[in-house]
Amino acid sequence: MAMDPDLNLDMDMDMDMETLADDADTALAGDSGGEAERNEAAEAEAEAERYEAAEAEADILRDRFRLAVICIATAEGKKAGMTVADPVVACIADLAFKSAEQLAKDAELFAQHAGRKSVRMDDVILTAHRNEHLMGMLRTFSQELKGKEPASERKRKKSSKKDERVIDV
Amino acid sequence: MDEDGTTGNSPAAETFDPDLIHAIFKLVWRRRVGKGGGGNEDIDVEPAPETSRRNRSTTANANALKVSCELLRIFVTEAIQRSAFIAEAEDGSVFEPTHLERVLPQLLLDF
Image (cartoon, rainbow over all chains, first blue to last red; front, side, top):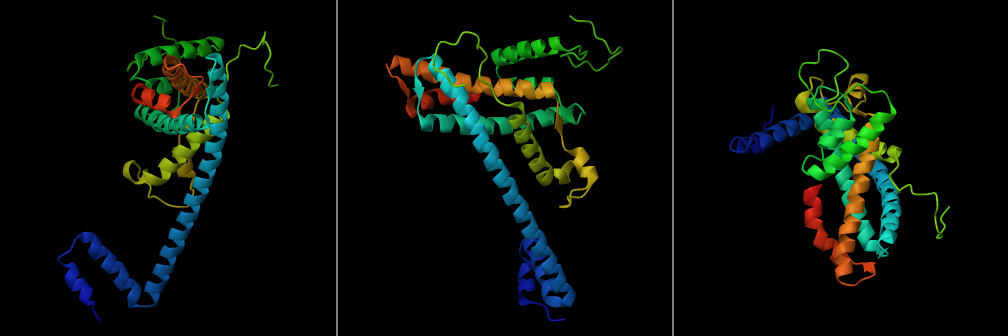
């Protein structure tokens, strides 16, 4: 078997280079190597396609989100008797979108931490823990929502839940 | 529906559509499943959408979405109100990017 001179050099380099050289070696080795290379290329292409599709979807959502932000911002600006310039709204929209993505990640982490697969109100409220005032506002809002339906879940996460119904403190 | 007259019985504030927020969340969660699946789970990271992987992706409560909408709405409202505060001090009638710049650090820290 003809060993590439590169492989000798790779002995001195990192493991990464070595594994790359191994792949290259298998690719050069024969017919089976060629198939592996094709499969890898096909997989990479499929992944790139999926990535692009996800990006396109994200763009659509970003546009819809921007429209909603424009709506809210102009209504809010009117209350203050001012008009909002386009670049400002675009900026706020992008920030809000990133905020929403961060919110999704945090809420998912909290839910998983609690051993759940579904994100609940409490998880979302927890993501605002840095701002007490904001958390209070969200709690009030959630109380109103809960008041409309006979829910029995409580805010405090106690480790031992004896009954399903917890007494309201 | 857009009338600039005196509105008597429409005090409802503008807010985000829960479905839109849900779609954004699902996108983020799907992205996470693809990227960070190798660390915590036993299954290998496979490109084909298996049922076991679908079960792992997170879902959201209806109330959670509403609270999220509220949170984001408050974010936008706060940004506008704080910028208005600065703009009024400068006797402006239009929001300038400079107004937003001034409120940005505190806003990002708060959220």
